[in-house]
Length: 406
Image 1 (cartoon, helix red, strand yellow):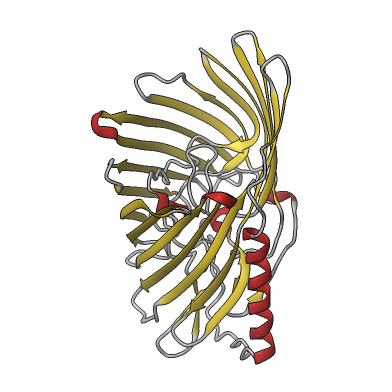
Image 2: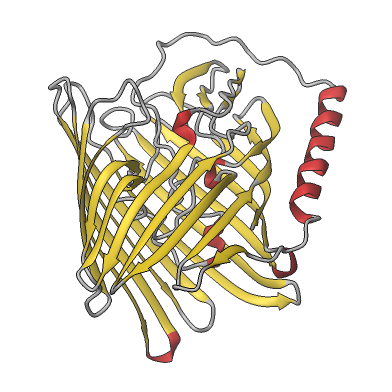
């Protein structure tokens, strides 16, 4: 999922385990009626997204400087994935930045600000829940809760408690480019559940999500402290648990450092680095991630973004994967509707599935802002190439989407 510094838009890392190697049943051929249904669904989804004018802010303010704000977004996308032999196409909620609704409250207390944030995904059919074998939509579950977050901030820093972002959340996804709305360091939001197809025509037990990740942090039930800003720098540390899952009793710790500044000539620069630990409750060992990213946006509209990460997994038989990511992008206002962003990126990962495996991914996207309806529309192409000694077809994804915010 795309990045915001805080809160981050976090993608889902690939599964930790694989199915046993079997020849999987092929999906049935899509008939004309299904195609017509999908096209009708696409038209309806985009009409709902783009026909609504930009509404006035849903905000109530009191006479003591406080406010309550209701916000949200809808994010339908037409996604088509080709595994080298078969193509699957659906209209889905894009997990890159899923549809959601939230409430934010702020109330000053002396020199401090108290904030509360409640936010949940809507549980719509999601791009993380489909592959060649069909769909497995869960609907709304408690794991769709994104934030139940209390915070107090002042000159001394900020203390947060509740379900919300860990310090490492967004540290691998710092991105100043506008095209980062659709194209960023997490490369499998739309096709992570798809199995790679061998050149022999058989589906493997390895998914695109298994073969790549940016190790970005997550949201947890946590306590967190962030320092005040000093010359553009802030630091933080947090401890948390996955309170939304009944099957995860592990402990999570992380620390991080961020930097954000604008220099002479209007050059914007932002960067982050974080170290996170997942300590297994069953004593199987720790999983330690080191991640970082940086982005520079020139006044001309040209931008450069990089990210990298390594994982040290103490579990028996686990590999220690790593990756590098880079992107070049450009943005300008070529039409009266709003600015346009274009970009191309490249991802290189090693040892994700097993020692010696490699993943190469590249993508290209264009994003168009439509100011009058507060919408970002985009078209994206993504190609994944995986190798682990066996031969696999490339996995290709086309995505046409629009995100409307209120």
